[in-house]
Amino acid sequence: MPKYRIAKADVHHDKILCELNCSVIEFMHHTIEAQIKKDIAENGFSTFKKFDSMRGVFTEGGPAFDGAEIQLKRHIQICIRNPNSIKGFFLPRKEV
Image 1 (cartoon, one colour):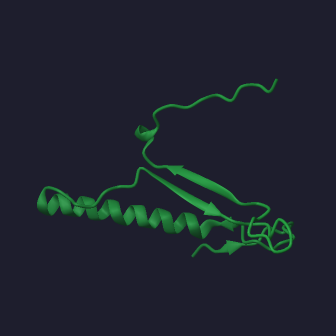
Image 2 (tube, rainbow, N blue to C red):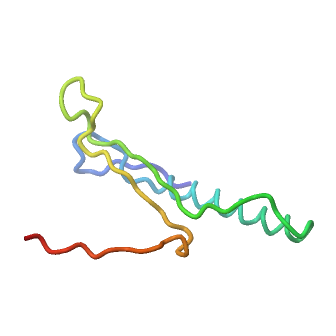
């Protein structure tokens, strides 16, 4: 079973190496897809829906200052599971 691990150089001891997150999410999607296939085989349809995308918010790094709720390394990760849901993209311009 994957575990959360602390990066050796992280002074706040955040468990930022999160292989378990990925495994849980992949298991959930695999289970949903298996149920959809089973339903279709048995009934010709399924009421279950696949996720096109997912978003996770992660807080790390400890408080930005004493008493703060803002963390030093808060970030958001987005996972697009269905590339057809991407309607466009942009190339960042060079800084002027």
